[in-house]
Image (cartoon, rainbow, N blue to C red; front, side, top):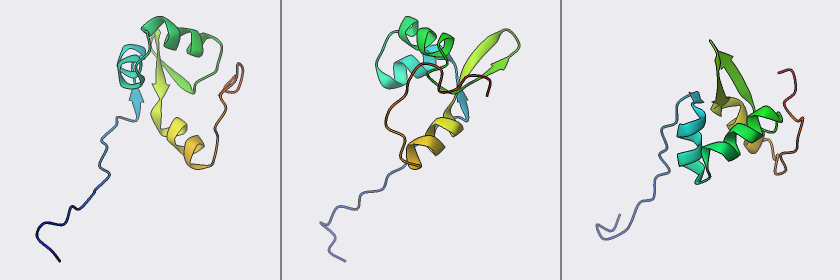
Length: 78
Protein backbone atom coordinates (compact mmCIF):
# COMPACT_ATOMS: atom_id res chain seq x y z
CA UNK A 1 0.00 0.00 0.00
CA UNK A 2 1.26 3.42 -0.96
CA UNK A 3 1.50 5.73 2.11
CA UNK A 4 0.23 8.64 0.00
CA UNK A 5 -2.85 6.70 -1.07
CA UNK A 6 -6.12 7.96 0.34
CA UNK A 7 -8.39 5.46 2.02
CA UNK A 8 -12.01 6.48 1.93
CA UNK A 9 -14.14 5.14 4.70
CA UNK A 10 -17.85 5.89 4.86
CA UNK A 11 -18.46 6.34 8.54
CA UNK A 12 -21.72 7.84 9.63
CA UNK A 13 -23.05 7.63 13.12
CA UNK A 14 -26.76 8.24 13.19
CA UNK A 15 -29.16 7.61 16.05
CA UNK A 16 -32.04 5.16 15.47
CA UNK A 17 -34.46 8.06 15.83
CA UNK A 18 -33.97 11.81 15.54
CA UNK A 19 -36.01 14.78 16.69
CA UNK A 20 -37.61 16.85 13.98
CA UNK A 21 -35.13 19.64 14.72
CA UNK A 22 -32.13 17.28 14.52
CA UNK A 23 -33.39 15.83 11.25
CA UNK A 24 -34.04 19.27 9.75
CA UNK A 25 -30.45 20.27 10.54
CA UNK A 26 -29.17 17.00 9.10
CA UNK A 27 -30.88 17.40 5.73
CA UNK A 28 -30.76 21.20 5.55
CA UNK A 29 -34.43 22.16 5.61
CA UNK A 30 -36.55 24.04 8.12
CA UNK A 31 -38.11 22.39 11.13
CA UNK A 32 -41.52 23.40 9.72
CA UNK A 33 -40.79 21.42 6.54
CA UNK A 34 -39.95 18.30 8.53
CA UNK A 35 -43.03 18.79 10.72
CA UNK A 36 -45.11 18.92 7.53
CA UNK A 37 -43.53 15.67 6.30
CA UNK A 38 -44.41 14.03 9.63
CA UNK A 39 -47.97 15.37 9.71
CA UNK A 40 -48.62 14.09 6.18
CA UNK A 41 -46.97 10.71 6.87
CA UNK A 42 -44.34 11.36 4.20
CA UNK A 43 -41.46 10.31 6.48
CA UNK A 44 -41.32 7.31 8.82
CA UNK A 45 -41.81 8.41 12.39
CA UNK A 46 -42.52 7.11 15.87
CA UNK A 47 -44.33 8.76 18.72
CA UNK A 48 -42.47 8.95 22.02
CA UNK A 49 -44.61 10.57 24.67
CA UNK A 50 -46.17 13.59 22.98
CA UNK A 51 -43.42 14.08 20.40
CA UNK A 52 -42.90 12.47 17.00
CA UNK A 53 -39.37 11.47 16.04
CA UNK A 54 -38.06 10.55 12.61
CA UNK A 55 -37.42 6.79 12.38
CA UNK A 56 -33.91 6.85 10.92
CA UNK A 57 -33.61 3.04 10.87
CA UNK A 58 -36.76 2.66 8.71
CA UNK A 59 -35.70 5.54 6.47
CA UNK A 60 -32.29 3.97 5.81
CA UNK A 61 -33.85 0.54 5.20
CA UNK A 62 -36.19 2.03 2.62
CA UNK A 63 -33.39 3.96 0.90
CA UNK A 64 -31.25 0.81 0.73
CA UNK A 65 -34.23 -1.06 -0.75
CA UNK A 66 -34.33 1.48 -3.57
CA UNK A 67 -37.03 3.91 -2.44
CA UNK A 68 -36.46 7.24 -4.16
CA UNK A 69 -39.84 8.94 -3.94
CA UNK A 70 -41.47 9.85 -0.66
CA UNK A 71 -45.12 10.82 -1.00
CA UNK A 72 -47.91 11.91 1.31
CA UNK A 73 -49.32 8.91 3.17
CA UNK A 74 -46.42 6.52 2.53
CA UNK A 75 -46.03 5.91 6.26
CA UNK A 76 -49.65 6.11 7.39
CA UNK A 77 -50.30 3.89 10.45
CA UNK A 78 -46.80 2.45 10.74
